[in-house]
Image (cartoon, rainbow, N blue to C red):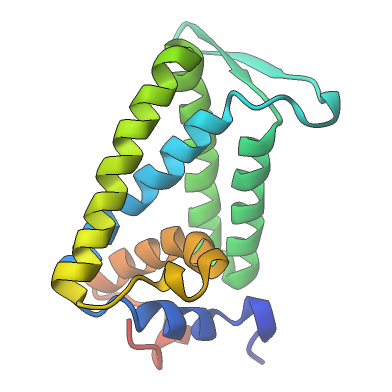
Length: 181
């Protein structure tokens, strides 16, 4: 029995896929979506710990890494859990990538410091969002999905990209046979 409501993967991708039919626009998304998430997590590193939760400290390649259980962690966790609920196999990969993004962005943010990190994030976000809008305006000739459903577009974009990569490898997930991406 298929999942329904908010966990109906085919419904999500029918919506999201309708906005992403042009191969160049899809390629642009494949290039820029995950860096948008990564740099968002990078700047969210500087938000305070939630409920005064302790920091997690460990050494990575001889460098101390401090992970803060804050808003960035919350976003990475929410994305991860949602993806696994949508599809265990593909969602687990997406959850792993979210965790890697959170840890790596925390590592980089702690090295850059806020005064440089926000500049890096601003530049990356401007570049990536400009690419996204060019992809939709020039190649797709349609407004992006976020104008119709902001939350769904932000949450589904990274997962869409992973499944699109899988589709490009000519091994689409079997339960998405009826979805035209």
